[in-house]
Image 1 (tube, rainbow, N blue to C red):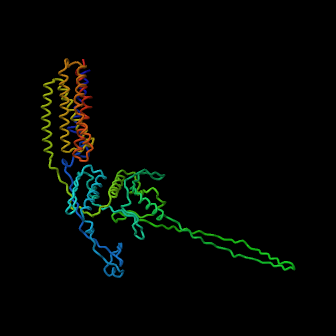
Image 2: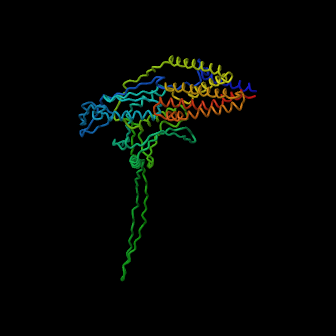
Image 3: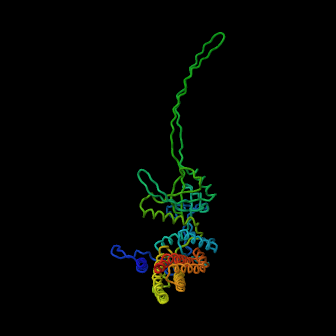
Length: 499
């Protein structure tokens, strides 16, 4: 029975090791693909996308009337047509000289950083060239990188304007926050999920929205048309000696009234970066200071729903971060490989493997059967540890690799401590002696580890990704040392000590 237990545990460890080191391959179309999740590598190992944003130096043609007011028109007019209407055309730079200053450069950098955080870019580096205002952004290379790049230099100017007069009713200064919401709609004919862009306005903006929603609302004008019959009065007069009697017979007024209803409405237009998003009016006053705009149609298709959410999230990120005071262009956009190659990482793994092999030989020579069982359990811990790092989405950096090596060293010290205490016991083959040795080893090791554990928890919440990578790797490593050795290594040693 004792041998069956140990063999079962060894077989389980071998299976975990094979999955961790070699993977699980299945046929996908005409190729074999590993179904085990890949490591999430940090930029210093995976490489990164480098984007340089430069201040826009271009100009645009602006048409103004005789009073100097800007005229918006989609019609392309010749110089003669402009002159006939009293218009003039001027070339105006996209960025005027008064906005090109260090304060706006810094503000632009902060807004871009906020957009990256809102879109959950886990790791990024951003720097500013204060001389010319260029902003250099470094982000990880993955399937969402292009989407981030496309939104990075969007100005994000929000306007709610009167459709007819073009008067700006609300702008970015009225926005408190913007996020994405979605919910299910169902009816007798269709059902699905609708994505909404939820714009919440600040106190002043909420008052503006309430007034606007009362003004720009669908209304009905009523015209009353009345037809009246002619009033007829008959007078009969009788003269007597004492009195005159007058009798009036009046027919009742009869009228027919017809109501003519004419629906009229004032409309508002929502614009982002001068591009029209929608034109509409309000069905009822909005008193909660929140405006919800549906993005796309209600759908049950997962791909379409994801596209709608992605589109809404991009707009929300741009609006929530505020509009850039300076218009930027993407000057360069390139992927640069890491200086650390896969070959170098492979050499490091081989070196660690050789050192471990020597350590395992020492275990077996010094502690015999207990050393052999501990070595097998140790291999299982490393295998499970590598899988745990993959499936907890820990971003592995150079510091993370150091954390993995430190965890392996700590586990070696811990196992050596346990085996040493067992060997020094008067009768290392008794089960009670092994249990007491394990208890003593756990107590001595983890009490000394308390300060390190506190530091690791602090590292986990550090804003710097490389430090948080080290912290997360160490956190899972120490947790695994405590649990795995209690469940597997200690169990194997106790089973071996059973009579």
